[in-house]
Image (cartoon, rainbow, N blue to C red; front, side):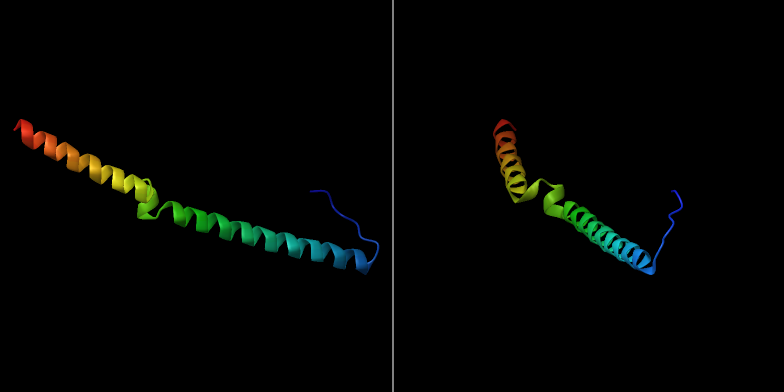
Length: 71
């Protein structure tokens, strides 16, 4: 990064305010990413949601019934 030359304290204060806001934005983005990552690891999301779980249960139930008939 190029060295920035300031000509007044107002410029320095303005730059510090911008950096502070950028830091706050970065913190919020990090929180958002962490929360999204946590949500992706919930058991229902890992298994395809509630509808995915219901579908898997129904398929396994039907498969067991079919296998019992052929046994």
